[in-house]
Amino acid sequence: MAEHRRRAVVLVSGGLDSATVLAMAHSQGFELYALSFEYGQRHAFELEAARRVCKAIKVNRHVVFRLDLRAFGGSALTADIPVPKDRSHEEMVSGIPPTYVPARNTIFLSIALGWAETLQAFDLFLGVNAIDYSGYPDCRGEFIDAFASVANLATKAGVEGSGTWKIHVPLISSTKSEIIKTGTALGVDYSLTHSCYDPDSRGRSCGRCDSCQLRLKGFAEAGLRDPLEYVSR
Amino acid sequence: MAEHRRRAVVLVSGGLDSATVLAMAHSQGFELYALSFEYGQRHAFELEAARRVCKAIKVNRHVVFRLDLRAFGGSALTADIPVPKDRSHEEMVSGIPPTYVPARNTIFLSIALGWAETLQAFDLFLGVNAIDYSGYPDCRGEFIDAFASVANLATKAGVEGSGTWKIHVPLISSTKSEIIKTGTALGVDYSLTHSCYDPDSRGRSCGRCDSCQLRLKGFAEAGLRDPLEYVSR
Image 1 (tube, rainbow over the protein chains, first blue to last red):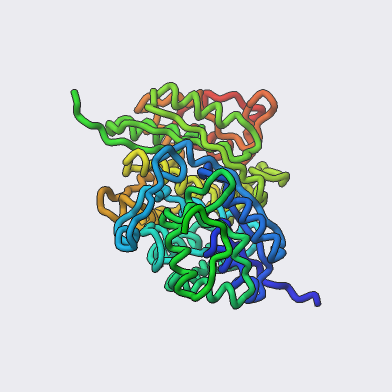
Image 2 (cartoon, rainbow over the protein chains, first blue to last red):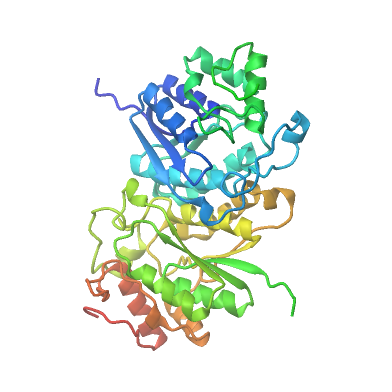
């Protein structure tokens, strides 16, 4: 049993999508290195969820990397700007909302790349999705492809040819209900996850922000009940 | 005098190259936002130098962003790996040395991009150089071009068309002596800078690491004397 398993770095936010991607990477036989970020987000519930998700799937290592994006501000998720509520699906999928965090996925992928190079893990997994999403530019396939080019030019491994970086975004073209069905088939326990942008002090989801609405709609369309507790749903 | 000056984010390490780039951006009339990183590097002298350089040129704001790359290790600059000394110029410019920090410039540029977007500063300045350098893959023009593509795909500004990111690397094709001559002409006080990878406890430069050797050679070729104090030169 000395066979060397391929290592993967998986970005785990604590949300539904990344929990599903982690299970997908696991099912493909990768040795899992999970990376989460404490970046000055509004609440700690999502990091607690990330820890639960990583523990449930027994990742090889889980690093919570600290960097304080509040140093710059500019987003409803890191500064004192209200989170939009009760938007229609059309409003949600048109335009870029105030919950956009400037360059967030670029920053997260860059740091993941640094870790991945020290691990010689050439597979990065990211739970971005360009269907039932909030219009963030750094959740689109064009961005991912461009970042993969950067990765191969930026690193010793890429330049010396000892490895070629692949950025896996297996959910990029899935609807939320498809994601939930995939994860459920793989045994993901969605009660461990957290998606709400604006939970109450006990961590209960608001049910009204874009993230809650997309999640609830996904469960409804999948014919499943979301196990999370909601203030209103 | 209500004219709006264009803003630039300039990465300032405290070294000779970035001090020169800061002076170049200043001479082009940009309103300057300087960004340095406390990333777990071996010593604090370069950050002190960065503060001195920014103060001398009166930048609008200087942010020292903290992120601890020691969480991952893998480099002589962030882990307990020896810094190479007394290498020949041929050794220095062939291959990637152990002072390479995985994905460092990708990480730094990503964070600069996040700040720049909140500032609506579409000009980023970086003191990379692909001539008298240590063979780092993320100091080459191909990498910079690829990162600019990422920047324009990753950001709200890039996607909505409110701005196009430009990454200025004015020193990319300069020799060290040309850099020193340019900076000297612009009034850069190189006694404020710090380049050594392995200074003594008083901050004196070793004179033997790649960075010191490239610096000393540059001053010699420029016909100038390096104002720094060296243990040996």
